[in-house]
Image 1 (cartoon, helix red, strand yellow):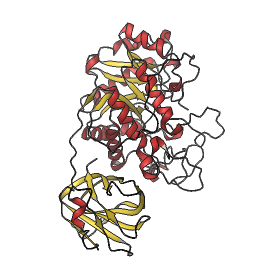
Image 2 (image 1 turned 180 degrees about the horizontal axis):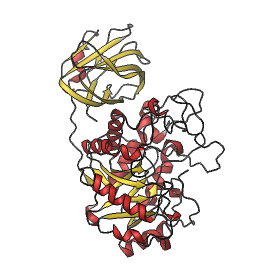
Image 3 (image 1 turned 120 degrees about the vertical axis):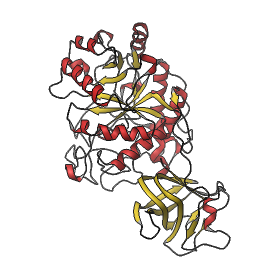
Length: 481
């Protein structure tokens, strides 16, 4: 597994973090911080690859995967454009402006997916750096050749990460850099690339341009961080400590004795963010967006996972429950990223459904479908009582790529769960299912991730409501992300 062990213990005083129960609201337009780096894994495969990686630990996807949490997207394929687009939308929501993609050598599976990843990242204003992994024949010389290859092949793309504060150079993290003793060859790439060693041992970073830690457990105590940070500041190097929301690999590595780091409803993540900011970090590297085998993810995990597998959930994170908890760590990352700073404005993302015409299969007098797009959360549509299913359909006026639907009820209402599906149509006659039916907690808002569908008509089909025998929507909003 990927944790770096054996780092000496040196405690660092923390910044005061807000309590784990602090509520984080709906995603808001905020700067994307290119100083916040998310480790990103494109190594998963779907049915055509035999569920690549999801089988780790002897599991049988799609409902049984090698992870202790279950993705909202299920056992997804990293080569699926809709999946990559959804990931970029979620990353944009987190405020992180840089992903660090796991890369396993020239021509590797992960390398072949880089072009579509760069294209998707560019659409969401995100930059891409590289995590150079320890493939079997890696040497210092081959690492230099890899950096040259990546720069030549991908360096001209608009989403390729370059740090303006450090000579407009690209960034390359070298995982398990201590496997190789002599890194003199890195002098050949220093002029155009920042290469980071994975260590806090300052005697092991000759020829490197910075240091990081990766370990999602050690960030809780920050061993060696004070000395590493001081060394980097004194020698013109980048200090990029790594933090994570938690760690558990029991299903992926049965019998493994690696310690577990409990999330503590978000308190563990807050503590590590405090450690990172308190260490005077240049960048904060987050382990991880989607390393599912180690349970260190901030990617949304399903609140109602497949039964019988013993999956954990994000239930209770930052006071959130049900479907709202699925995105809790994205929103908390946005909070900390905003405090960290270093942001650039995200692309504009207007509500595509605002003021657009709406129809329904039925409604109660005085609670017309048009109330759902009038911009007033105090008015609402209510379907014919005691009769399911019921549908609410909005005409966006033109085809658009929809990545997120936000549904609201009046602010004063009590929480309830509504069961619904999301369908789309280009013509308004034939509809296809974009998001399968499931229950969403309205307290009073529910956010539904859509696999980046191009559609003109959006239809919500309700089949249940624990608060009232009808479908109810005060505001229906649709966004590209």
